[in-house]
Length: 181
Image (cartoon, rainbow, N blue to C red; front, side, top):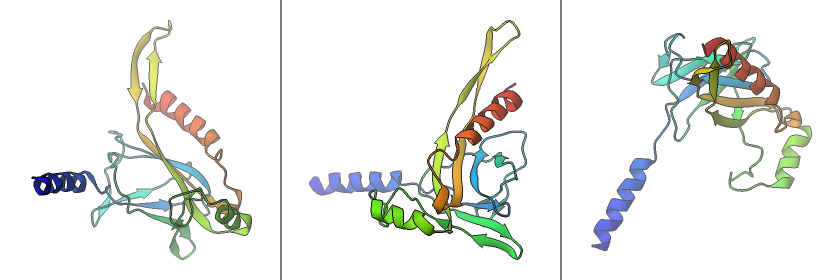
């Protein structure tokens, strides 16, 4: 009985571990800062898939609208930055973790951020804002919701937790004023 229960539990655990749809992000030359992928936008271009991998070309303003739905789970994404010769692959790195990814390691963090000019994928965050819509009299006439992923790219020596605050304010204003009609 214990064996059967263990097998059922193990099967459930394995089934719950999903892989996200893999994506390749193409960034403009010398891109530095935060960008957003706004998912499930009906008016945007169709999703470009190559070998089952979504191809996201990030515009200069850092806001990509896509018909693709957000896919949660284990990530297998590539980040490429435009160069004179094509695209270079960026190193994915989370500076608030040690080399094992398990705990904050202050010495490792200081060593990495001190003089490094490496370009890194620093953080990823999923945001689900809802904006209320009002008529000219101030009465609420509805709301609209979005799901977007914020990703921060930059040189480790000057990235901080506040690097995306101004970008998020600009993004939310754009979504509220332009797409939430």
